[in-house]
Image (cartoon, rainbow, N blue to C red):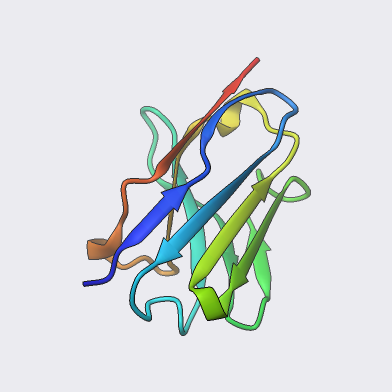
Length: 115
């Protein structure tokens, strides 16, 4: 059974940086688009960034210029480098395919940005 495991979250001050990692068991990342999502308290989950197998990327307006998504196809890993973090980036961050596979959401990793 495929599992997605996110890690790398934590507490950081505004302006700081974090790098999130997503590890996939199985071949879920072997094809298609992979994305990072986030869900802030009381809000719906939103797509933050995507990357194709070939490395083409797209970002939500809120992430442009600050976040960088990357992937290691050989290791089934996807990363999200987040710079210049803001309190409004506080959320649980998840990885999944884009569009997401409903049965494969992991537990996510919590990012808390203090002001």
